[in-house]
Image (cartoon, rainbow, N blue to C red; front, side, top):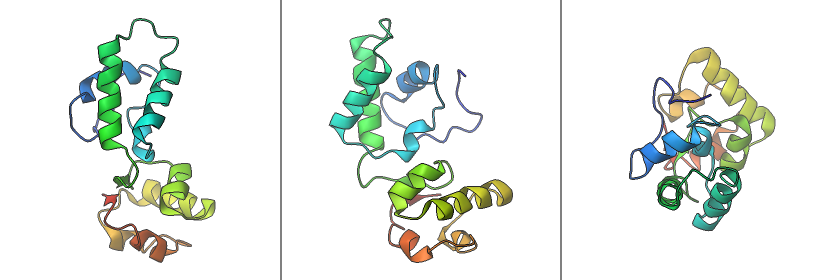
Length: 138
């Protein structure tokens, strides 16, 4: 599955184009949006993911690392309209069923525009979401 999604959800920044060019050969460009790894964790993940890719240069690897480490770090943005349920569990500290309800609601009703929209999700402990409201990216 190669290429960028029709609506690019990724934040801008140096290394984004390299990230898209190299990483979307194997997975969606939105994959890191649910992660908040340290720089060291990203370095290990990139090494693991690209171990069988000798054509990816050292400079390209460095550009990818800079991009993901700058944009998907601990305490960073939570891309509520893009990330998958298992990442919602981790980042919001909610149950699996609540995370599934967020994804189902999002698929049925469209993207959340703000925190008030999330109050309509059945079974969601909105207090847990409100605790992270400054991190939410709609």
